[in-house]
Structures are given as C-alpha cells and as structure tokens.
Length: 495
Length: 136
Image (tube, rainbow over all chains, first blue to last red; front, side, top):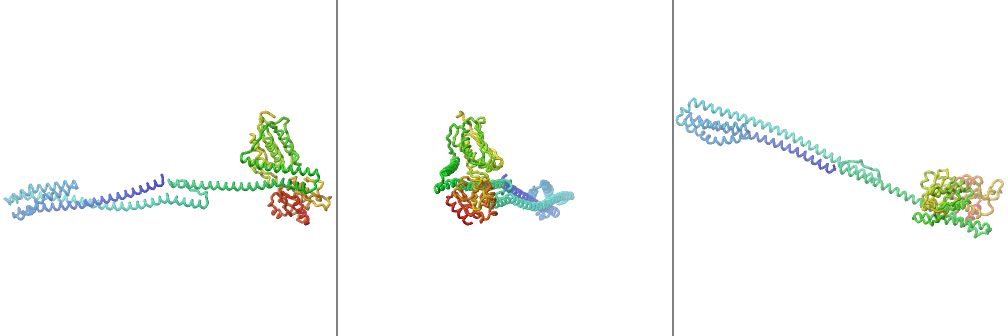
C-alpha cells in the first residue's frame, strides 16, 4: 500500500473515530436533554393535576356550602368550576398522554370527576334548590364522602406516580449528564492519543525515511559512493530508497568505468612512450652501424677486403632498418585490417630451410638444428610473409636464449596441415605473461633483460598465419625454453 | 666468454704500456665499429651482456670501459653501479653509449666520464676517448 494511501486511510480512520466520539457525546447530551424535558413535563403534569384537584375541591366546597346554607353565593365557585372543568380535564389528559399508564389513570380520574359532577353533584344541587333537607341527608353525605375520597385517593395515586416518574427522569438526567461528561473526557483523551499516534506515524513513515535519504545523499555527495539505504519501506518511501540505491549503484559503476577508462588511457600513454623508446632504440642501433661504417669508409684508407666487409655490415644493418620500418607499417596495416598477401603454391620446407640458412651464421653461441622432410610441404601462401614468420620465430629463439644452446626446427605434414615448430632452450615465458605474448608491443621481461625488439614480431606473425587460414601458438615455462609452432592448411596439389 | 680476440686478453704477460679498453655492447657490428674507430694501440676486450661486463671490468681493471645502457641480463646502469665502488674514476674511465639521448645526466651522475648518444660520428667517439684518456 502506498504511503499516501496509508496516510489518507489513517486520516479517514482518525476522522471517523473523532466523529464517532462526538456522535456519542451528542447522543448523550440529547439523552440528557430528553431526561430534563421529561422531568419538566412531569412537573407540568403535577401542576395540571394540582390545578384539577383544586378545581374539584372548589366544586365540592361550593356544593357543600350551598347544600348547608342554601345561599346562592356558595353556588358561584361551583358554577365557575363546573364551567372550567372540561377544559381542565382535557388539558390534564393531554399532558398525561406521554405516559400510557398515567394517561389511563388520568382518564379514569377524569371519568370519576365527570361521573361525580353529572351523576352526583348536579342532581344533588337540583334537589337542594327545592329540598335542602333531602340533599343534606346522611345517605347523600356518606355517598359524597365516599365519592370525593375515591377521587382524592386517585389524585394521590396519580401524583405519587408522577412524582416517581419525575424522580426517575431526574435520576436519568443525572446519569446521562455523568455519562456525557465521561464520554466527553474519554473522547478527548482518545482523540489526543490518536492525534499523537498519527503524528508519530507520520514522523516514522515520512520524516525518518526522508532524513535517512538526506543523510545518505550527503555521504554520497562527500564521495562515499558505496552508500546504500536499507531496502523496504511503504510505497513511495520504498520507491525512493530503491531509486536512491539505483542512483548510487549507477554512480559507483560510472566512476569505476571512468577510473578504468582513465587507467586504460594512462596505460595507453605509457605504451605510447614505451613505443617511442623502443622505436628510438631499435632504429638507432643499426643506424649507428650504418653511419659509423660509412664514415670510416669515407674518411679513412681501408684495405679493399675490409671495405667489402664493412659494406656487408652497412648493407645488413640498412636491411635491418628497412625490416623494422616494415614491421611498424605491418602493425599499422594490421590495425586497419589491410594486410595484403600475394599467395602462390610454395614448398614450406624450402622457406624454412632458407631462413635457417640465413640465421645459422648470426650467433656463435647458438646451434640451429633443422629436421626437414625430403618431400615438399605444399602450401598456398605468400612466400615473403611466411619467410618473415619463420625468420621471426628463429630470431626470437636466438634472442630469448642469451646463454646459447640448440634451436630445433621441425617442419612436417600432420594429417591435412603443414606444421612448423621452433624449440629453444632459452628463458621461457612465465605463466603470468603467456596470455599477452601475441599482444602488440608486448615484450614481457625483455626490456629488463636488455633483449632488443619491438614487441611486434609475434603479433604480425600470428596475423600472417591466420590470414593464411592457419593457426599459431606456443608452449613454454619459465627457465624451460619455448616451443612456438604454426599450422597451415596443406595445398590441394603439390608443387 | 671473451669474443674478441682471446689472445688479446690482458694478463700478467701484457705490456703495461698498452691501455685496455672493455667494450660492453650486445650488437656485434657496433662492437666492431668501436674497435675500428678507436684503432691501433689498445687492448680490446668485449663483453656481450651486463654480467660479463661486470666480471671482466673487475678482473681486468681496464683504463676505459665503453658501456651500452641496454644490455642483456644486467643494464648498463646496473653495471656502472656494481663497478664504481671497486674502480675509481682515476683508474677506470667509463663512456656510456646509449640510444636514449636524454640518459646523459643520469649516466654522468652514476659515475660515467662521458656520454655518447647513438648513432654517433666516429670523430665524436675518437674525441671523447682522447679527452677522457688524456685526463689520466
């Protein structure tokens, strides 16, 4: 459930509870009002009963006075009471209507009064007008007393009932009042507690997570990109923390990426200056021979046989320079995928033999031992490029075994491929460097050990072999020498 | 160990007057060029790598060492650091030859008497050799 939905729900619940509390309070106050009204009504009823009783008293007193004295003036109050009686009786009955039992009593009382007036008082007065003595008879008197006592007893009953009702109403009003006060106090306390709880809930569900996000954001801004918020939280808070964590992750990733890019740039810068250093060194050494020997030839008197020897050196060193420049150009062409081949049907055995012959005289410390089959090894390839590859492997085998030793060269047909391998007894390649052996400009420990080179030979060699549809790899271990081998697909028809 | 010529190795029988020059250079043509340029009147001994260079320098105590910085096994700087405590500047002069023209300051600091960047003119080498040997 989302946070806003929760807050709305909590507000609605709080409003309903508060409204309910007020509703109960209002109902209690209304009950109190009812009880008060009932009490007041009981008083009205009692007053009406008293008024009716007084009227009845006037009737009886007038009747008695007239019968005893025969004086007309006593008949005056009786006549007035008689005139007013019906109105009073009606009023009395109407007021008593609120309580059925009292209404019943009121009606019986009214009936008794009416009966008394119609069937006793009026006839008696008629009699007394003519024969007072008859009207004053004991029988009549006793009947009058019985009837008036009966009516007064009924009034007493009615009043005491009404008093009881009034007392009950008063007590109910007290109870309702107590209840209303109790409810009001309880409602107030409950509302106060609910409002406090709601405030706490708001703080917990909104303010606290927002503060946590603000703190985390400050840490993030200060550079601690590993900052994360604990997951979860309702609705929007959950979304906020999740979004924050995503943002922090993205930032951390971007920074890692930038750092790695920076590192790559730095590495590439280092490689570039390394390359400049290598190129400089590799070019300067043969250039020193070329310049030195030509100067000697130009400036000094050199015997003819030595002239020849120096010119050979100049020639070989100029070729070395040319080959170095070709290597750099090849590396550039490889980079742009423009290595061109001029393939034709050749004998790989002859290519290998030619290179072995070339390198044989180059080092006094090394022996080159070539095992070549008597039959041709037909390959469809570029003879110059493949000669370059074999030359590179031989040159490496010699360079990387500075203490000398035997270099074994083998060329053979294995199934449908021509395989050439060059094995040396030199330094070998430590395992941790083996993965980068074919990388451009990679020279391993060679720099430290002072072995010259550009780090391009094997890169070019492998590309040339792969461009011929072959493959090239090596096995080596530190101090155990290396075997570099290549395999080329055999040509369909031999040369 | 000694590539050129073994008979020229300085020893008890060698005349005291013939100065010994140790050429430490891994490129055979450059070794030959240096020999040819400096010419007659010296005993030449050659080292192909840094280890050989230190060994021969300490054994022969030559008057002059021509030292390439980029040597197999041990660099020229390491060679210089290894021999300088044993061979004083008065007894043994060192000319550093390097393909890095900006290595001169470090080489002189490390105890070299002269510096020659590759490639060099034969006359430059001659002048430098005469200068440093003329000092003693």
